Length: 128
Image 1: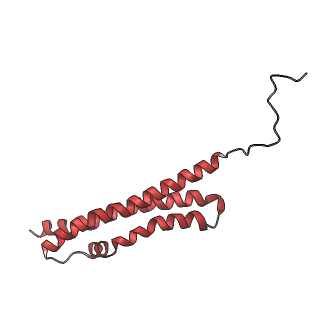
Image 2: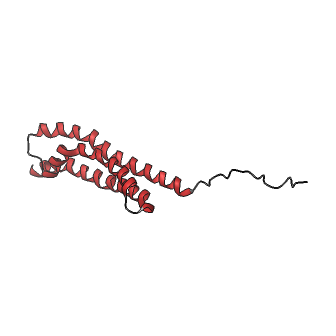
Image 3: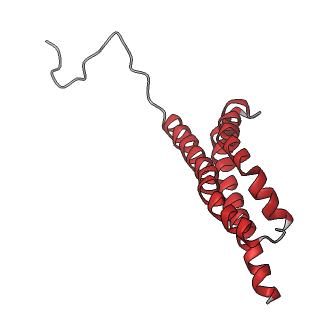
């Protein structure tokens, strides 16, 4: 007679799902979302400011000129996040590296774009 309270034995063993796999996916998603926000916000906001600056007729500062001219290059940030996830030298740190790259890009890009877009307005207000 067998023990009815014993767990059944199976020929197949289920592979245990590691919580590290889930954490790696979440870190990649967070990095990608941050990089996408860092690329999307300037792409939506800068054209509106560009119309205002054209109405000024004044020369814009260098940081504003760079932001106006090269903001579409920010769409490469999500590609860099994925590249960090695939090619980072230390395999254990790949998820963290991709997450940090996305978050740092968001933390740097958004304030830089705010500064670049408002700097000409501040300079015009200072002249009068």
